[in-house]
Image (tube, rainbow, N blue to C red; front, side, top):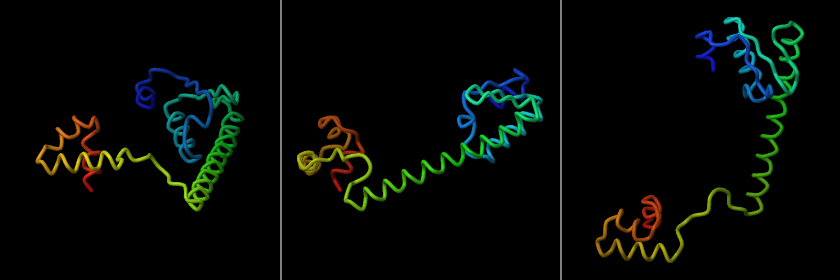
Length: 135
């Protein structure tokens, strides 16, 4: 988008929500400064903000700060939930595809001297899964 703006392909950017434009207030202000230096304004559908006016730029800063605060609250809650789940013994992440049966099949095939790719094809798993089963 910024490349197209530098090439003067447009003079107004319509954005759905201020939180969709940047991750932090610093990012938002930087984007706004870059666009203003190119004489390009922003219009936000959800908030009804237009940065071509001084009041719109002020509200942009306020809503940007609130959006950053909201993201940080969500992040803190997610981390707290993950820590609570871990303390209760919940394993995080993807489940391993390596079952005891697969591990035995892979090890016996490898002991017979079969190649990793051939074992993966026979077991219908990826090469990484075969390596994981060998460990």
